[in-house]
Length: 381
Image (tube, rainbow, N blue to C red):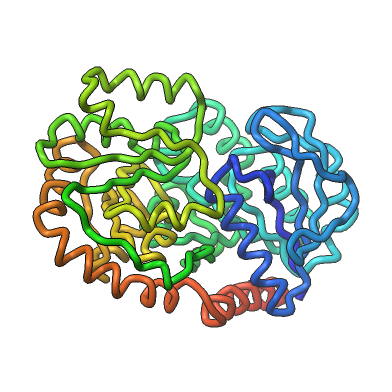
């Protein structure tokens, strides 16, 4: 089985967060299982470019990756070199798997593959939700969708990572098929369980800092709290938006209870472990890798009902669910503080094993392999 993965931003372009990390881990796991995997990506790295060799296949953690220069420096990621190579080589592959939507790499690659009758899998990774469609560049997205996007999506097989993401997508288009398979997520050391509950609640927000993540909601919720707490904010984002968020906190006493820690890499697991609760009050989240990362070291989570993993968290009693408003967030934090000794201890002891059972291992690899095999089989009928 030969599978070509196409994503505008591949590792080490970690500035793009979850989609880059999820796609990279999937390719690595598939390659280790014996699938012939190649990746076409651009040099995108935010406003800058990755310092990588271009137009030449290189090995990146066991995966063959070719990086192509892009001629636009924004989220369109237009790369004529990538598209030209794809036209020449696409029929070499049994299947093309595209990650994310609403950029010229994804949309035009989808069109090229379908024109050559090569089956296409699309992992939207949150880009086809109502929130994504309506909140940024909605006019441009509507035009693309009407002119060619809808037809391309209808002829694609869609991979989503949660039931919520699938239901949201079905309101936009009816594809060839929709399959729900969880992300692979890099996990922390399950032996990291040396945390002890303290006299105050140690909260952490760990994510890219952007509007949809709901950090503004959390900051407003803090103003309603009377319990002792400290919040660590780990992540980066647009400086102007971060400055806007910082301006929400005008009380010096409250500001003293907040640490803006900046970006964390692989040392994030130690940081997560030193906190009582991860808080993610997102307006829209197709999956939520950080939820799994946090639980992998036993740190409980408070997530909004709009996070794809909210149902999983609730069913397995691994945390709490809130709505996307300050009152709901503050009320849940108060409840957590009242019961933290019992609840946090139980979650810290049970979560790591549950997470490893469900989000790693051969079982998850086999789900992706069967998914690919079924699509290839149908395409050849």
